[in-house]
Image (tube, rainbow, N blue to C red):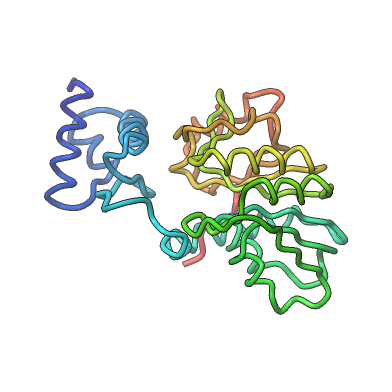
Length: 259
């Protein structure tokens, strides 16, 4: 059996030469489990050595991706998650929608008039709903962070403190069964925590590669979510770990990704 250092050195060498690696191929190469390889890739991603993608990893180029780059990536997978998130919206709900490319994919599938009001801190999400006439759309004020596609800061929190939503859809950078919910940005974590406090029902959706991949800023325990939407092919051991946490959210599986 190879040492973790040897595996990771090989992964970096392969990325330098080929630009990407596949978890299944690495598991065969090192005669180990795909779970072990996925753990290697998660830890290397957090360390900034590569960028995890579905099924493996790619070489990290430059700084963090822009919002438009994230929006363009993995669109069919995000749309599938978004359809399941839409099913949680009840007629007449006031819905608080966090910034994020998966949440943007969700609102693009909402019907005008199904929710009473949608409140968001995301200019792209507000613009995606610009043609709505039956559902009121409210964009919170604050300081724009273009890379996140969100407004944040004290003004945003002040406006949020005056309201209570029936449902909030929180964007998540990382979800762990033990540690809970996390974000890559401190200001984002503060806003997400406030969202959870000002909502009756609380939901989030997460891509497979962000499960058990910790982000640096803690938001809340897993028990602060009522619903967690996962991809249809979420690894069985990760799904079991999430469902074993009590109290914890209802874990919903999205439909299979449409071609």
